[in-house]
Image 1 (cartoon, rainbow, N blue to C red):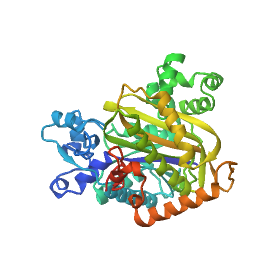
Image 2 (cartoon, rainbow, N blue to C red):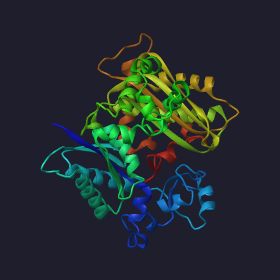
Image 3 (cartoon, one colour):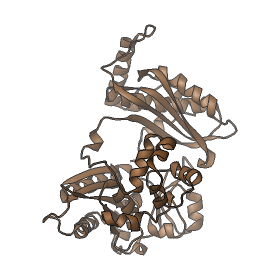
Image 4 (spheres, helix red, strand yellow):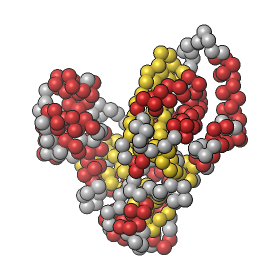
Length: 418
């Protein structure tokens, strides 16, 4: 059976949730008129950090406000800016309901992120004689139910749907459909930087292959792309021709994890190694807890550091000799990465820790020098205490120091207050 794929993306999701839930704004809003939104931003807790804009309404964006901008800068651009603190629990609940709405409209649906979802409908089906009209019905249902605008991209596969979704954001009506024969005229003239999923590889393609458009990339022999990018060369070649082999996975959020990570933005710049080390340990404890819950352990550990003003930093990883989910084994490796790559002239504003290259713990490699069963029992007990009484019921002593972030993070969802 031939399918038409779609990607439905909520507009300025966090900000839209806030505007839609406030009677003083909701009554005058119109679905296809962004200017009926107030200039509102969702920002982090100003009392503990400089205040970063997490989401902004289209009206605020028209004044120059953007995501990740400092709140003070946004307020200078818009003197009457409305600032609300994030309510992550509310956003997640709304996201679940929207994903369920998509699932009721189409036979195949896959959640892609908190504010995006893929779907698919059979081509040439009497149930969906007009794919544009089917997308419009979903769009209208989301607006009528949640008062949130969405844009929908349609295409012959998931990757093209992602590309058309980007176009739908700038198209009146918010729906764009490319068929297979539209690829040469619609996809190929786009700049190589618009090729979704490439990130820095787009810069490499422009610099080393002297390409300007996606069509230029499509003319590069696949062997040359393989030689430069490895397996990614095949992916780039397929995408440049508007091809994608991935399918809708309704159980994507229940699939085995490929890795676990945790990140936090600090309330101030950290310049002392000892303070950064505390944050690394707290994040590692969270990652290892999630590994144990999934009955998995990993062989590669990674550390990410973002410098002051959220500019610069590094991401480095190390592959270990054996799999583990023990903080005692992973922590020294993370400190070694910190000592090797941190430019100590720069303060640290955000830290992330990751463990991947996972396997299930039924294939346990024992150590001749560690009491693995005893350590396993210890963490099983710690986990039970945390699950019953909360993260702060049992903490490392360093979390009580000035550098500790655990007590504050324990009251948040996704890094923000619920």
